[in-house]
Image (tube, rainbow, N blue to C red):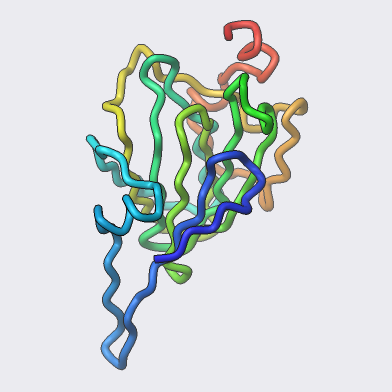
Length: 182
């Protein structure tokens, strides 16, 4: 495993796995506590989630959990690919209000590590996308919140137009509304 921290948002890390490949395919150790501790991304993961999107252009996000239920996430695409977006909503961070992105795919064998205080979203670049992610805090429906994916104050440059967006994400608050509540 290798960790890179040059994704433009404080604390966001790219973790590259090292699959062993041969004529049969590959074997990969997806997670190892000892290595994660050495590379400073180990957490007591309390929940693991699997997300399936059947259509290309499915948009999810920008999601986060309000204090005190914020989550660290470790995100990976198992099948297909996504344009993954992370927005820094930590008011004391030097990258507050800035966003970054990365294309995660089943081919690149990578995880994104998103620390607490990051709103997360993605759009599928292929049909039948499966995403796996670990979180270090159990989901709390009362703390569930969203920031509008197409807010002009954030100005995320999505690579394709969404074809499917949930009502929850369509009705998410603006970044200015978020700022009023912190």
